[in-house]
Amino acid sequence: MRRSLRLQGKKNFSRVYKEGSVVRSDYVVVYFLPASEQRVAVVVSKRFGNAVRRNRIRRLLLEAWQENHDHLPSGYYIILPRSSLLSVEENVWRSKVKELFHEWQWASGKNSPHCSAVL
Image (cartoon, rainbow, N blue to C red; front, top):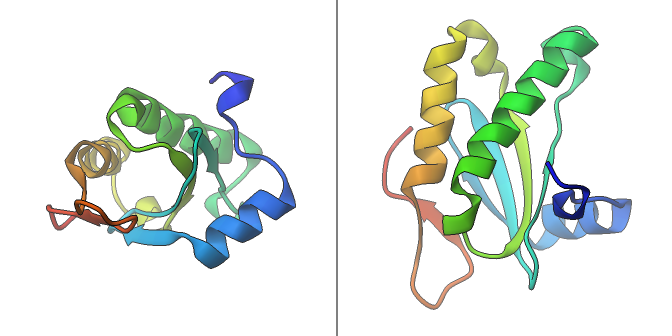
């Protein structure tokens, strides 16, 4: 991922968490705050395993976002995997996360996201 697409800084994270909208699925939680540019961060806590496993989860979630980011509105995204992600096979949660980004729709004239599919 290009460095220019990374969401960085405590101030930006705090704004997204406080002012942003939230979309929850079975395997991820996505925070979104509309902005003039598109940036993303994936936050994987230590409960997901060692560094190798956390980095793999991070890479796969970024891959799912990158495949669909051209169709998503500009803004700041924070992607958090849920612990249920650990209880299923990798190909299952990867396909569900890709579906989430693919199915992501936006209410016209609103900044709050909603997803038409129950994932």
